[in-house]
Amino acid sequence: MKTTKISEQAIAGHLRKLERDGFTVLENVIPNDLLAELKAALAEIEQAHEFGYRDTAFEGTRTTRIYNLLGYHPAFAKIPIFDGTLPLVERMLDPGLQLSSLSAICPGPGQVPQPLHSDSQMIPLPRPHLPIAVNSMWALSDFTEANGATRIVPGSHNFDHDPDYDGSYETVCAEMPAGSVLVWYSTLWHGGGHNKSEARRDGIACYYCAGWIRQQENQQLGIDMARLRSFPRRLQELCGFSVYRGIYGHIDNQDPIELLGRKRTGKMVWQASDEVRKG
Ligand SMILES: O=C(O)CCC(=O)C(=O)O
Image (cartoon, rainbow, N blue to C red; front, side, top):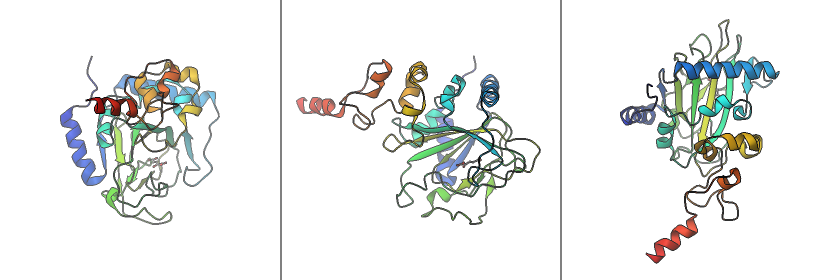
């Protein structure tokens, strides 16, 4: 079987591009069978629920958005831990990262451009700052200028402010074929484009954050326990069933992974520091 794992060489190249531009595209990294599975899962949940269009300008009044995807279908569990992307994101943050949110973002025909924004603009830290979150957009259909591919202001991840909600800015369009993934630092200025085509643009945004800040979606409460127990361990950790650097996220000195019937592997900070003192 062909490996999907991103190589060290590819990671190094993408990190260079990310440092300069704030974004990079991993072209054709999603295997065809996974792409087909995700499209089928999206169609299945849309048939089962009446999601409809959203009703705010930011979310898009001609856009189908489905939040908390992990709660709806097991196929989506493959996205956050995909080895073609996660190792790159681990290098942009650190391996203690978490999944911040997983949502489908599908602007339909006639959807006007989304206001430009940065994904972490609600976090009250002076910019620029160290990386706190990383977003990625999985292209389930081709992303073209005509169907509203994500618009980007290259280099804006290093600006000292966020964009004005009604501002007009020079952007480039992140066009990519279906099966590709756009990755960007949360501080990058970007927004969905104008869908002037006759078809929907289907994407899934897989948003990660550092292990020491709050997740955007509350996955510990939003996904039912039976489903959480069925996830691979790494996904459970990303969903917040983990302890960052042996302290953040503990429950009564226990690792929350134990609530899912697993044994903790790392030491709590107190045990680790006692061992250091004992020499
Ligand atoms: O749809 C897109 O291309 C970007 C969406 C986005 O940035 C958001 O909703 O925060």
